Length: 198
Ligand SMILES: NC(=O)c1ccc[n+]([C@@H]2O[C@H](COP(=O)([O-])OP(=O)(O)OC[C@H]3O[C@@H](n4cnc5c(N)ncnc54)[C@H](OP(=O)(O)O)[C@@H]3O)[C@@H](O)[C@H]2O)c1
Image 1 (tube, helix red, strand yellow):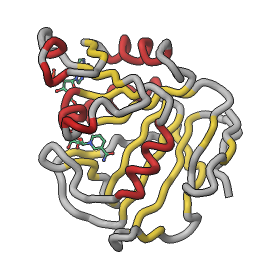
Image 2 (cartoon, protein in one colour):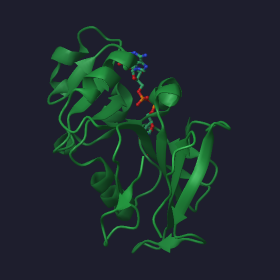
Image 3 (tube, helix red, strand yellow):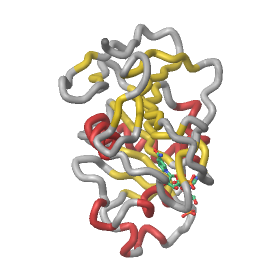
Image 4 (cartoon, helix red, strand yellow):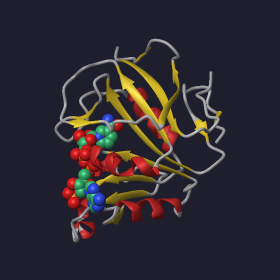
């Protein structure tokens, strides 16, 4: 895996030369990713980063994450949106419009790999999904937001098989236009030569 920095305007953007299955999320310093069905912050720079990283590639998510997006923003454009649910009939409801609906996470990952841009698959949450795909993933792109706002949904714990590969900025924080501080971090599994760009 040898990523290259390809975007001058966003701090981290990688092109992967080998297939990856990645997770991408944003969390507080305490690991909170969600609250009451949404995210307890507003960070346009992170939304832009998320779009840039996932554009052109399939995204896999749990039904609750799908429903956390305002209707007018789903499906996420330019990406095959794969949603998993155990509800047999949910896929034929209007709520599911524009999604590829599957009942099984492993099946969702296979479907994603055969979708356009499936050389990179991005699991985008939420906590239930992350907990089930940790073994299948080899990359994690994590935005850390410098707040300890409370919430009810926690980021997955990355075990010792995961190693920190870099952050932007290297030290300290970016500051959003709205004053929120944040940084992008990169984690990967295994021995791959894989580093965040300078
Ligand atoms: N900060 C971030 O980057 C970020 C990213 C994503 C989400 N979030 C937040 O996280 C929260 C949602 O996360 P969550 O953990 O509660 O829910 P989730 O993972 O998004 O979705 C859970 C749902 O997925 C379905 N599901 C889970 N495992 C399944 C399996 N093995 N087979 C089939 N279906 C399965 C079930 O749907 P059914 O109930 O329909 O069966 C389950 O209720 C929200 O607050 C959201 O805003 C934050």
